[in-house]
Amino acid sequence: MTARTHARGASLPDGAVETLPALLRRNAKTAADAVALRHKDLGLWREYSWSEYADRTARVGLGLLALGVQPGDRVAILGENRPEWLWGDLGAQGIGALVVGVYSTSPAAEVEYILEHSGTTVAIVEDEEQLDKLLEVRERLTALRHIVLIEPRGARGWLEGGQAITFDALLALGAKGDVADYWAFVDALDLAAVAIIVYTSGTTGPPKGAMLTHANLSLTGQSWLRIWEATAEDELLSYLPLCHILERALSTVVALTARYRVSFGGGGESLVADLREVQPTLFVGVPRVWEKMLATIEIKMGDASWLKRRNYALWMAKGRVLARKTLSGQKWSAVDHVVHALGWLLLYRPLKERLGMARVRAAGSGAAPIAPQVLEFFWALGVPVQEGYGQTEGSALATFNPRGAARIGTVGIPTPGAEIRIAEDGEILVRSGGVFAGYYRNDDATRETVDAEGWLHSGDVGQLDAEGYLRITDRKKDIIITAGGKNISPSWIENRLKCSPWVREAIVIGDRRRFVTALIGIELDTVGDWATRQRIAYTTYKDLSEHAEVRRLIGTWVDEVNTELANVEQVKKFTLLPKALDHEEGELTATQKVKRRAIASRFEDLVESMYR
Image (cartoon, rainbow, N blue to C red; front, side):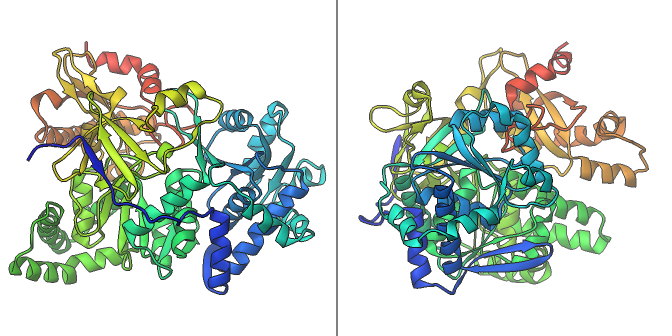
């Protein structure tokens, strides 16, 4: 069958577009007492109904008006996932303000850039840690008038000195107003107006502010609703950063559209514990989340008894075979069903429960490519991880593997309302109601990204197969052309290398070089645990990475990966990084993507040593 250059998703129904605050009001009327949000705070769960959700949102909006916020002003939110993030987001949107999310991991310099570039007038921050960042650069934030602090613990001096007000004080200000006034603002919103500015984590330069309209967000919700068939009976664990468009879409846009419950756990390292406690029906992770879960299981199996290791190896091998059949569209035989039933009793169900995914009926992976081996593992357990593709500028999602017809190695077919086209140079172009309104204060970049016909130029290279499934090759700018003229996708090799529980990062190098090499960052926890069991003494990351035994451990894995690669793709030499890559040091973006130029510059001597 021949490949295609164009594919179109199903149509969306007419007349289904509403702003997010309007959807919240609808839910508060039709399901007033149903639980909308749950938050774990100091070990205890607090529930909020749809009517409470709407009430607090309206009070935030009215409180912002009392602080002098006008339609078109920018309101920033800096903090971890929690109900106040959503109340601030929708409260500000409802009065016509533009909401700017900032990663809680962002250093002060990045916070300064985003708030000053956006002209933020009010910043809602979570706690003393985030407040300190803001106060460090406060004098250079020319538009900032007010700081609102969610958690006042430890910041009494700043509050008493008038540097900030509490979130409770903001709610109290709003309580003095008339709720009807807030909803009047909501009714007056223009669907074509900008609702949020999402600063993309640039790997080659400063972040750019992608402007998404109320219509962009609403249409995204309608599209997701049809993809996942989400209902009010579903529950989502919100843990990815809310300022990332993927989590923003799931925790607000789709949740408001489908009316499902959103739970906020303890965050950070408590993800698996939160999963076990919440038992969500919907779960989405970036590849690193799925990879780490797999690595944790494999490490534990390595320490298990011979019988448990044998049971795991046997049934996982059979499960992967069945997963490959499912993901290639093949039917199971009667024998396959019997094998799966036995595997379910002996391995798959216990592991699924251990991961906290006993109730998960729909799962997704996005934001970066994921290795097929990782997908096979979760499909074998009965966790149907569907890979999708999109970007901030397209309101999160352009393609998704359909339920019951997922294809491994692809990112699916166009979502409802979306079109995909492959340009002559292989670049993926996207057109949909989710395509953004442009970059804030950057018309030149906007013109480079969206053409006159409304096609979003993704910067990615890929192919459509005969059935309209999209395969991603790599970022256009990252394609390696060797000295011999061969084109290589570094991400394919990197993702395969990162399938090991010992490897956290892999950066493949080879552009205009005679052969391919790699900089590899070890996973400190797992390699450190292995070293302890091997009685290898070490004190620091650098010390551990320099041990000959650790190099042999990683070298064995690199050799195994090389057996699956074409000769020109094989990693001929590798070097272990002397430190963990870090966002604050400019080596990673806020979304943990590698900044290749920064890495190449910082570790230039290590790279050159591999070519001497």
